[in-house]
Length: 192
Image 1 (spheres, rainbow, N blue to C red):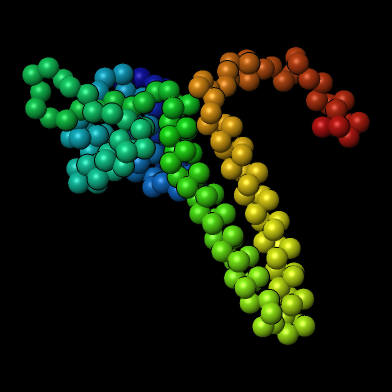
Image 2 (spheres, helix red, strand yellow):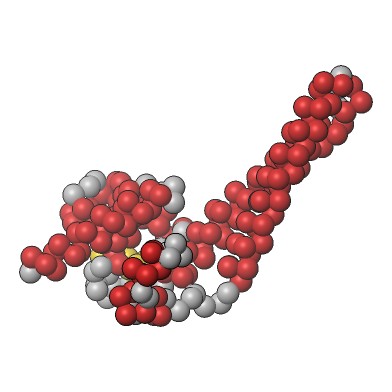
């Protein structure tokens, strides 16, 4: 394979491995997804294990997770008994699946825990000393701030996930900063 083609493939796969760690998934999942995404043909577990130089067991275990998150799907190959996979290339679909499955659940859990904390403080209010009541009021204020933040996050996530189609990133990728913005004058004026 051409050296530049190989370099682009390897850097993309490695980059997706790092990116998935940022979202709380393991590196192998990202590299598997990247390998499938960058391969025009479906790949078997053996192909993936060989390409990434990892065990077939690790590939199999992580592919189940990738399938569950909607990042890849099994495809049928005529005349083949092995399982073959292809990546979900619509990144909007992948993002929506991950956000709706995990992040919304985490935000809901946070709101539930915060609500229980408020309830505990209010139930014990009569038994608190004056000093403890001041501390409880402080806690209620902080917990209220956290509740507001998580309610806002829940609203944003819900709005984001309600969109049937992803944003049009074409405008962003076609943006020419040198032409469209005079960055030097913005920095000089303190607006950049």
